[in-house]
Length: 87
Image 1 (cartoon, helix red, strand yellow):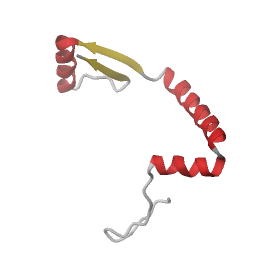
Image 2: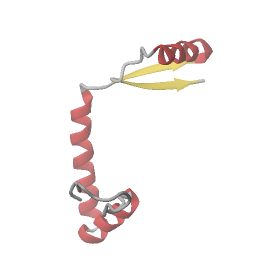
Image 3: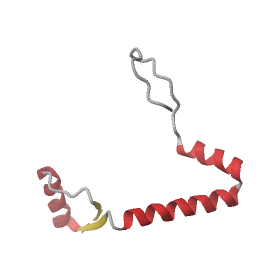
C-alpha cells in the first residue's frame, strides 16, 4: 500500500494485514515445506540482527518487580532490554 496524501478524512484505501491469513496464503502458494524453510530462514536472520541489539533483563520476586516498576515510573528502563518478570 502506498502513502496517500490529500485525502478527505476517512477516505484512505488500504487493506488490513492479518498474520494468520498471510501464513495461510503463503502455505497455499508455496506448500508447507517451502513455507517452513522460508519461515526458518527469516527467523534466523531476525535472531542474528537482534542478537547484539537487545538484552534480556530478568526480575523475580516482589522486590525485583517493585524495583523494575519504579524504574518504569521514573522513565529509567532501557528500550534495549526485554524485561522478563516472574513471580
